[in-house]
Length: 132
Ligand SMILES: [Fe+2]
Ligand SMILES: [Fe+2]
Image (cartoon, rainbow, N blue to C red; front, top):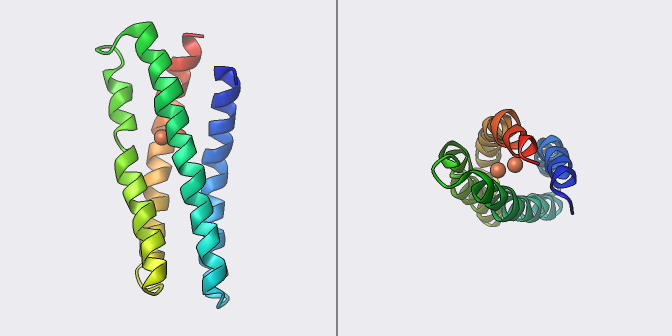
């Protein structure tokens, strides 16, 4: 997939993920715990591929173009990824042990993603597009 199309896909995922997280919460709150699990698993799947695309394709392209030193500020944005995936794993795990912690895990995940996505769309994506 060409990089400009990939960035469009990544932006669409940024826009869709908060709604999917809300769906998980709503599904649970209607009493459907087993229905909420696959929704969270879908978030995990989408985000793992999303992160592979950002690190394996966008960051690699950026480093090839400008070098590692000039890519440093963008690398710092992508260093949020392990923290984000840890929150996702925590949310998935807390659905096994009961929902008590899941909702606060999911809310924290949503907040963390909102700031992360804002930085990517304000800084990383425009930088990559400027180099195409
Ligand atoms: Fe990211
Ligand atoms: Fe992203």
